[in-house]
Image (cartoon, rainbow, N blue to C red; front, side, top):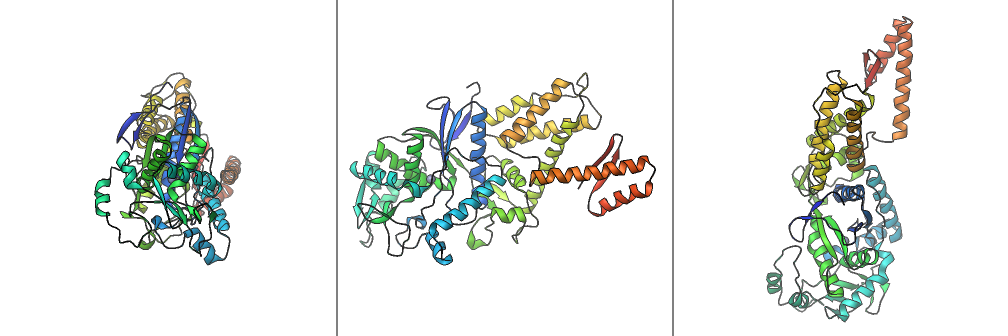
Amino acid sequence: MQHKLYIHNTLNRQKELFEPLNEPFVGMYVCGPTVYGDPHLGHARPSITFDILFRWLRYSGYKVRYVRNITDVGHLEHDADEGEDKIAKKARLEQIEPMEVVQYYTIRYHNAMNALNVLPPSIEPRASGHILEQMEYVQKIIDNGFAYESEGSVYFDVEKYNQKHHYGILSGRNIEEILENTRSLDGQSEKRRSVDFALWKKASPEHIMRWQSKWSDGFPGWHLECSAMGQKYLGERFDIHGGGMDLIFPHHECEIAQSVASLGHSTVRYWMHNNMITINGQKMGKSLGNFITLDEFFTGSHSLLTEAYSPMTIRFFILQAHYRSTLDFSNEALMASQKGFLRLVEAYERLQKIVPSKETSVEIKDWNTLCMDAMNDDLNTPIVISHLFDAAKTINTVYDGKGTLSETDLNMFKAVFRTYMIDILGLKTEQGDSKYLDSYKKAIDLILTLRLEAKQNKNWALSDKIRDELASYGFVVKDTKDGFEWSL
Ligand code: ZN
């Protein structure tokens, strides 16, 4: 590739030059949602972060196979030994099949991703459709001596693994210390150590989602699905594995241990993690009452929200922070973001109306290179946005008649906005249903054209009536030398 992309690798804790194993092909795996509840803010950040990476890699000329799974096997919370999985619980409470729960929330997730303009991945495998692959994976780890069977369940032997390999390589956790502290289990547990994690879990009688295996009627451990499906679709070695920072431990640490225990080597070259979000400075959580779903953001129906925020405002807000920084949601910050985004949209729309001159009289920069360099520096979207704002200022100067642009320079502006704002950042200039909006805009234009005709016919009464009525609906109409301008 012509351009050098640097990405931060969690494994080495530094930015590294991105060199795919098999250029121009890139394999990328991102942990997808567990589908037992409405998609919320916590789903938006990883999906948008890796959507940006997906878009940028494709733009840079790579052929990307992007795999994002659907976790539709219920699992138990935090590998707890007891309890009911969440999908099954929801199904029992609502008296429906677990797969109805899965289907309902998968569709809700897809709709939300669509609204946020997140591109669909190349493959979206479901854990429940890959039980055989997961069983084979468990067997391989047993055969290699890193797992043991106990009461119908199979556990990964962390201590044994850590004697030969490094459990903690990704998270930097001191596993010796954890092992030391958990040396004596009280004999109540079927696990040798509390740090051991389940590869296969025997199902309790009330557990609905279960499959037959040689060990027991049960279900695979959560960490296993990503190892098995990643390997199935991207091979024994692939380029990128991503997810939220909260997945580093134990999920991704366990994934590495599983692949090393099964294959003798790790599968992933670059591990990438987005940072977490907070709401009004607090971690988001059901018990804190600040758990806001994406739908609630889009409709403004949560009590913490003073208004509805469009999907593009949410997307823009997330991109205004670097993916490795924390991000705090508040009404003030979202409203500021909304204003900023509308400023960019306005500049983009004005850009389409500017008529080129013979010469350029305003100062211009090589915004294309500036934006490209920012993207290649670990996907620095806030810097890209600041360059777009900078370019927008110049557009406004020209639009206001205080400067001129040659055709070449005008086309440069158009290309920069088209590429970075629309294609790479994925910001749609029209909010909501674009077809509906388009018709609505045309209707207002028609009314104002009729008003212009009334004015030309000196029918002041009609012309004023139209202006005043529109004003009462919240439209601001401005007469210009070419006709009119309006905004809501
Ligand atoms: Zn995963």
